[in-house]
Image 1: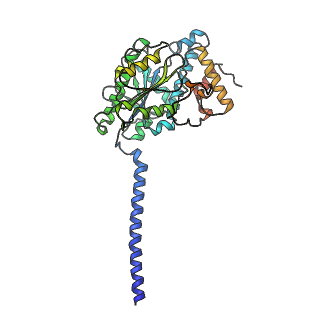
Image 2 (image 1 turned 180 degrees about the vertical axis):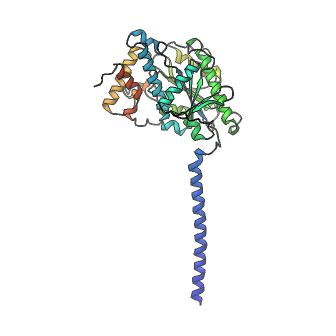
Image 3 (image 1 turned 60 degrees about the vertical axis):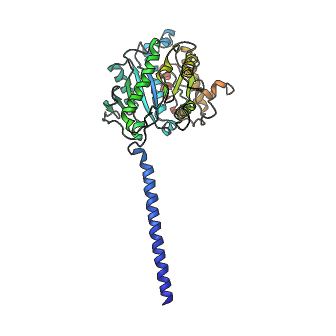
Length: 377
């Protein structure tokens, strides 16, 4: 009898232990499922970063006019090359694991800011199967939306995954072209409009001082330093530090301008006042304008604009060397490793291995089509 009682007691304890184990298992599974679905759930906090492509629509006779003047390409060839470089910038950002990790909302601002300009950019996104929406600058609501070549309509994204997967196609503030005389006003308008759109969508979930960090890139330098852009956005949005620790980040270009500028959330539109556009001192004057506003600037590696015939031929050589070698690293790896301008800052993560066959693929194919690169090269 005593043996039977002891056995019953042990069975009772075992049953109780099994119950608690099952409860902990259920709790663990629920926690795991919640964490896996968090990206698809409504935003508990707003995206803190945005990346903007400032794009001049590829149009024959209006694109890459400096290349046309050299005689290397005709007007149609310049349009083809401009479109290819814009396609490479879009696909590089879309395929970047680094940028996905920092929850970047993507924008393309087009000039001319007309229906034709909007159609050109939408057609390019559709050809790349890049999902897009077209928000209104006044209130951030969508006037049109499309997810792919089938023209499926897409509502305003309400979760992090959708918010960061779509391109927001916007007209350049103040109708007109990207002339150097008013480029500062254009960029100031882009900064303000981007924040207005994000405020409209996600402001309810944001703190009172919500103003995302914004990175600006052009379409003339398709060899994007993606690791640096990701680092720059993180650097500009470190809210746990004092404001003075949130820095801007600038990648200078070889012609005196710059290929990427990332501004922290507290930067005002005054950072674009007084900058010398289309000038050998563009980058220097931009740095001074930012620091005059009380914001420190960290400098990244050198980028290469493709504006002149020599630039295009050197770009073709870099891609050819890269494809022949099959090595990782992009254009700056072709440069002398001892050159300080080719090095990113210490805090930048090592660049991920490139998919050589897809690196600047559209530019490579366009240059082959235009005879810049031989078929056997």
